[in-house]
Length: 168
Image: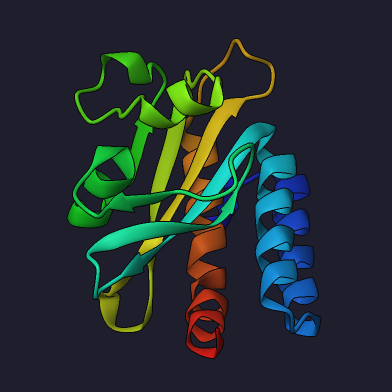
């Protein structure tokens, strides 16, 4: 997979992995992951949802523009990704039946495109979902390279996230 990612992006991802090894604070690690991915992929917003088995919901540990979100694990695009363990790339979310406009309506933000990827932990358990929202240029949507980069990152950092969740 890495051979299909540009050398510049791959180097930035390797640097992220190195930095994560030296950071012990949960919030700082999450910020580092989210901001690095947004920067590499030229994305406006990022949300990391973590699944709660007890409440059957997902809650945001990182979100741009909104303080906190908790959604049922069977709702919206994130819920679909959680349920199917499959990436969803939508470059026109308004036409998708899983799109939940409630958060956009509450925040005043307009979502055009989403790249939503499951965070898979040890043993294949879905820990949560990472969503990237809107490319910064406003014209283009997500593409296969974006999906590969995000998948590559999550393959490498899912262990960090799993350990951080256990420590939290």
